[in-house]
Length: 204
Image (cartoon, one colour):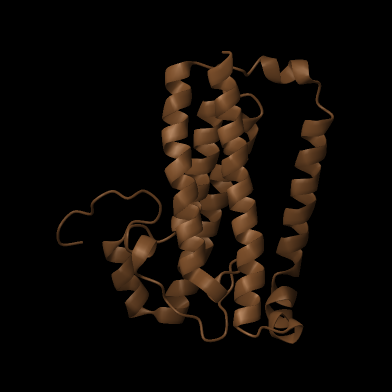
């Protein structure tokens, strides 16, 4: 392993930090810019309170589980090869860039849980012209790339939990957007894939 493995671990840390900082700065910047008040957030917060609590408890439980699991346990799942690690980095870095781009373009329309905001807009340009859920595509790429770059280990658990969670979010958000925008969203959904930027057959 040596130096290259250390570089990959450091690169992963940078990508995760960029993701975290983008979300914090984005929430503050767009919240202030849009003039959002606590009262404006209250209805959505009440509607999704249970979901938020379950998510928070799940994250805390997972962090505690990882922290109290002996380090030797994860060695059984560790497999690192330079070529695989480089592939992971090639996936991880542009995925992080996609996350930042999509989050910034979504602006004040972003919400931590699936919800339709007042004066909700349908974004179809930029990264949203490539996939319908570029933030989730970026998250999958970041986590999947980190798993390969760092040699699996505990990242396997993160990836295994992320995939079904994000797929569930895609289904929920597609339903919300379809109810809000109707035929416009049906047309958008027909021409733009959900997560993977694969070409659609002509006529779909």
